[in-house]
Image (cartoon, rainbow, N blue to C red; front, side):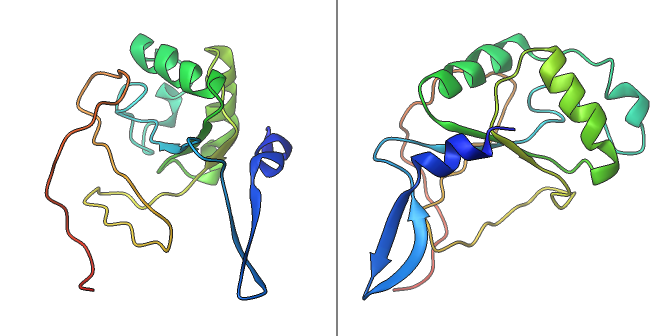
Length: 144
């Protein structure tokens, strides 16, 4: 993978004389992209034989590769298990997806609520990849 490229992009961050989590340059996004049901058919782990033969969604391939080429970080974050890593990497490479890393073992079942000390933006995939647009919505946050 291209982990070294990502590491070079990160800026050292120091607060009160101590190193804290590094940050990406201004304007660079760190995309975590699901696979099943998002860039290809929704294939459950119980049917891994379908993982090698499914087709990518063309708009997903085009949009994600565009984001990669613009300098953003692409990390696939999937509920597929480590046992499915090789077939998944082969499939991504076969279809020409550009990416930096892949995290396996995302919890299954949806209804995700991500808590982090860094800014998190979530976008629900609803069947079409396009450039992102700004939209005002209501979100849940911690009380100040």
